[in-house]
Image (cartoon, rainbow, N blue to C red; front, side):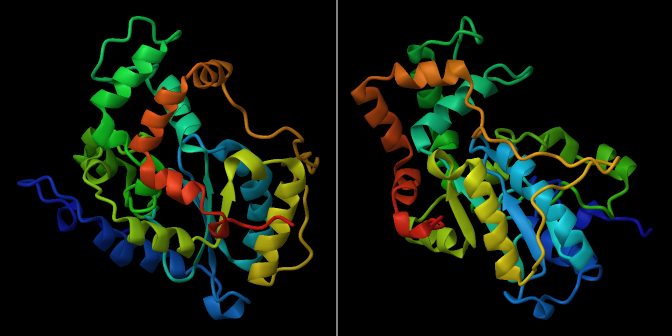
Length: 303
């Protein structure tokens, strides 16, 4: 294995990371050589990617959709991956799958999880991170507004290619300065590349239209729709004979789950305690997310 030269992509003087160069020059070059030609599929694509925006039901999607597709796509040499990596792995021959959630409830859910993380600095004093108050939430949003604003939409413009690149030796990765950025944090709060994203509304809508299958976390995630999503994706690729039950190593089928994505009870309670004016404030913080969320023609039609 040839040595991976991080200096090609990282400027130690400015701290700038050349994300798109890394994706184009390294990742795609390695992956494409292992895949079936994109032209051999109905949609002209040979990669499937779940763009997982944090707190949008991604674990449910991973279990009920992604892992089932993995078994089917492996035989066809279709790349199947996903993660909290934004637009990092998207090319012209990538089928993009993404879920958008009602922005205020998603923000509350992020708050409820993130403030408990060891080493995370919320920039405000929260007396009891296991029982936060509405005041704690609002103070946190104010202190981190630039970072939190339109979080879901910013994820569509985010590049974080250092993760999952198979050709980077583990010892070089650990020794690199990328480690100090802790880019494996799903909320990206230490990554300057996420913090610096500035969104144009028209470009955001254009980006959302590029998503091949955009689903609504609040209405689409259930057993019946999970099966329909698998059918839709497979039909788009032109892959037939799909199976809804992938298998364990002991050839035992994995049953699909009836329940929709999990919502932490404390997040639900906190969200339901918000006043009308507080909800309006949080909607204003996420004004572009709100517009995309309510633009129905961007979403998959399950019927």
